[in-house]
Image (tube, rainbow, N blue to C red; front, side, top):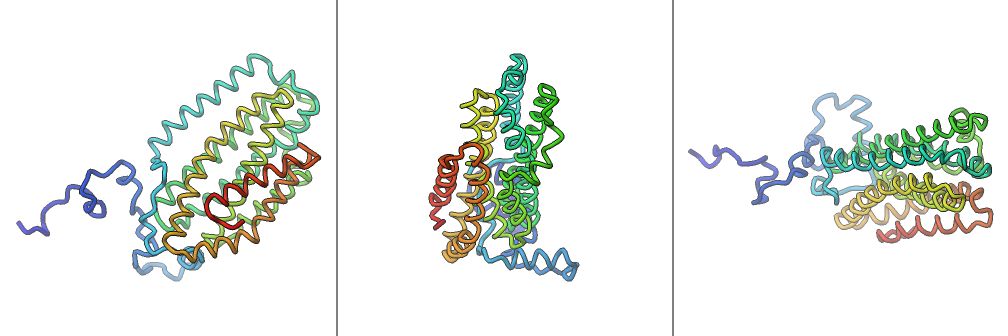
Length: 329
């Protein structure tokens, strides 16, 4: 039998590894036939608006790489392992909610803190959902399957926390029916000064059509701003008011953000190492976008700490994340 006819022991794109492929490699790599550097022409429906959109905003993005399929998720997460891990995370959150409910935690909350929860916690499901929508756009235009799969898990995290915030809102409504929990969040989201910066930032991220710019706006500006202002500074305020449940929930939420940050760091490193010009592109975008993130943080933290220290810490830590990736802003 000719060598060319001998059956392969694994998929052709993994045959050169000279080792047994991992589960991650089998189910995550080279799954998109239209990865830009596959050099495959758009022979079918190439003139349709959808294909033209992908060609312009993904293939023509200012962020480029010659070998997209070489990217690997640093956690090498697949849906099976993600589900197992998050099942444990959900069990932990369920346990928190059940224990605090049995202890009638919500009935003992300070009136001033309940107002903060109504304006700064319950409406957060809107901005978290905005991150989920931006993640979905990034998935749809992802330049390779390993990026798409990792972003799918990021989007799944956002939906989980939209549900959890909504659940907590109803618990607070049951304990304090006169305070408008479950009824006023949209009004606060649309008109409360604390959310104005996040509204602008989220809406602009959702119409950043260039794939690279949308990734930068979402994962390097919007998500870090939410991490530092909402998850960290609101958690610190919650502990000051004795609301250890809210603080624990926010800390659990940040566990998902840490995995997303590892993805972001790995992708930025991959882009810059593969094409040094990408750093200039990212820095130029960040110069425009970072002030939007800083304004969002400052507005959100104003009611938590009118002296401005909370905002300064959140802005500093968001910037530290980006600086740790070698970026200028």
